[in-house]
Image 1: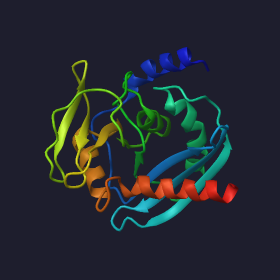
Image 2: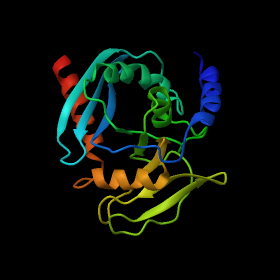
Image 3: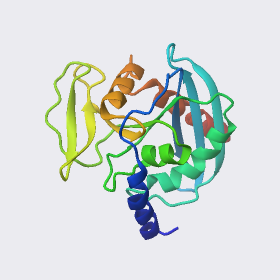
Image 4: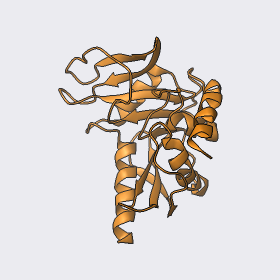
Length: 215
């Protein structure tokens, strides 16, 4: 898989992304994260499933190995999906919704990691990124819950969402089988205390523990 082939695949698979809501009752929600060895190819991946009501972790699946694809901007999913899919295969409790630390359709080819994962698993997914990859938006009002739509080349590709008063927004986009409105609602619900959703925080803490144990 060359970067050129990967970009062509993204353009092809982007047409399969569903931006309408096809989400059933959400009892369990998952977060996924991958960390990499500094100056090396080893990775540590984790998927954490949380109770959607209490936000308590109910199951964790882990996977480690050697990264199968180099880091290339815009092609993160080809690096991280081979790391994360084995985690999802290990789960005994299946999530009803997945929140990725990355982008969905907020992507040059409208097919970021949340969209790729959603299509691969045929599951509802949301992208929630710490930084804006591309697109433009108006100033987001300071109160928690304030939003500003993000546009790129005439397309609505995401939302700048303020999850805490007067704190830098996060950048939310549908991945697959989720609308913009539903993606925003769930990220705000999951970010009840901190800037980032609890799904992202739980997965990040787990991969940091894995990396610490390995060293």
